[in-house]
Image (cartoon, rainbow, N blue to C red; front, side):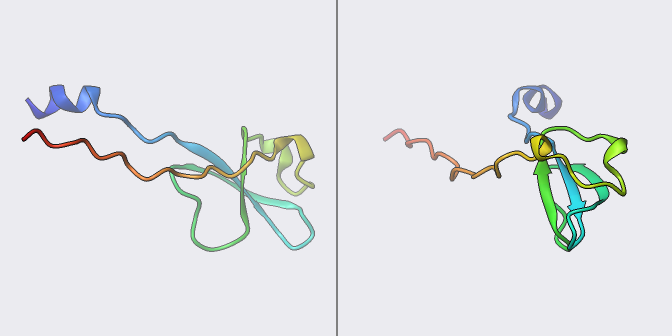
Length: 77
């Protein structure tokens, strides 16, 4: 039963991040729900191995996602 319910549950979106050093050179790529805790990880629209050890293209950056608080459903009386 739980399996059937999990099919319809909303799932968090995976996002892509690039690790930049102090000069703006891409040093790593990561995909996940949250950015890694350590380092200068910036959100990007997609990942490309061609970015490694090169400056991150300006068009690659995306605006950071602002999360909305979860909506609570009204309880029936």
